[in-house]
Length: 236
Image (cartoon, rainbow, N blue to C red):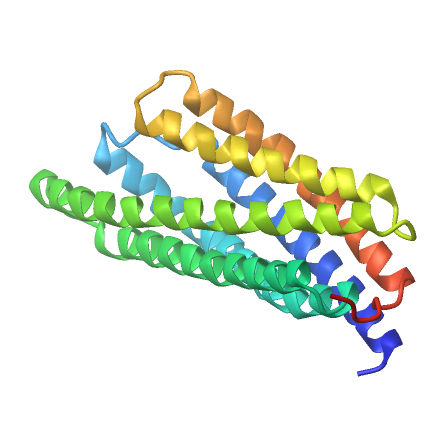
């Protein structure tokens, strides 16, 4: 692949990742507002059935975003040249994309089962379905944690590599590190949630909103830099 082809691929993938993720996130946020709590499973599942088409589309968009993230991994390895940190960067973004795909596949499978199987169930059967859904939710939550771990490492070391190269904008380097910090704050918030801290839900919503804006800015800026620059020469 020529240098120009790498540049075009990197720009397209980064911008597609940011665009797909923000559209999917906005869609799932809008349709999830006002969702009834699981205290009343009949109402909760009825609402899930109502918004299922929108949820399905949002999950597919997220999967597309994670496919782009997987493909960004070798582009960044080529861009930064052959060195230990670029190989680690490749590994972490590849892992983030794969775990993110598994996260969304579990999400769509769980929501689809609820939308398909909860129609006309008795209270007892709804409780059985709710218990099964809690098992799914536990797996989904830990896949989310896995994604945050790998994505935070990828963005952090992207920032470190950008800051070490004087030809690249330092602002992108610092933005990458700030985004990694937001991922770490998200992980810390999930730990607080596990511990039952009352304000963790509100804090999590704020972190998600700010993190989504930062991730969109990061993807846009990264795409611009990849499209404008040529891959670095190999170095140790």
